[in-house]
Image (cartoon, rainbow, N blue to C red; front, side, top):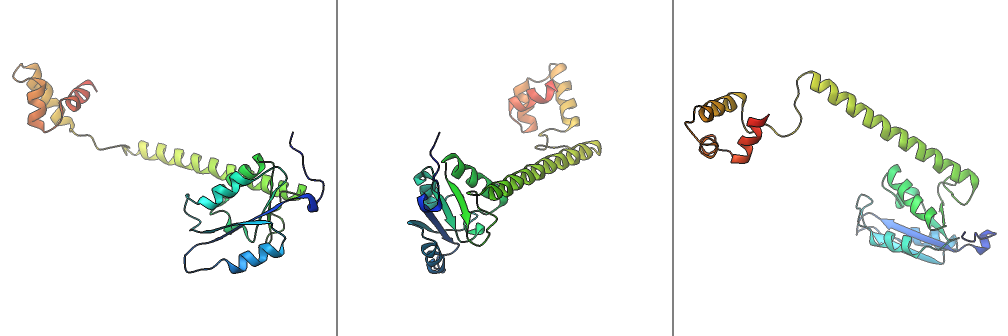
Length: 194
């Protein structure tokens, strides 16, 4: 079991600062994180929507048990609730904590902060379940109305019937019929099997 620091003075505060565009600067976040006693600050100029954020990855790999990832605001760390929860889970797996300076309720170094993130995780899971359920109900309703999902069939029912007749009357081979219909032989075999 990893050793947990006994007090805030034992904790190593690791800062993470991010701005979305190259035209913005990190000065304000950097100053705020230094004032919060962060000993190391990982800085990034990348959109929050980008999955490829190398400094975030480096920071997560750098974490040790007892460290506290400190951010000025949650939106500097994550682009969505699901993203926030995934990053918070990685931080937790490292034995570290997460603290937002602008949102004091988002502090996993306290029991109340851990509870809030647990509630967020439950809400996000519930939301995912609702989306899956609504999608499933919508697909079933569409199928009942005759909507077909997937790619459009290469051959119509009439073309398949005509192909069957040409082949059964021994007039043409499957390859010849496929060529006449402008499809691959395998496509015609699949259509004839259905």
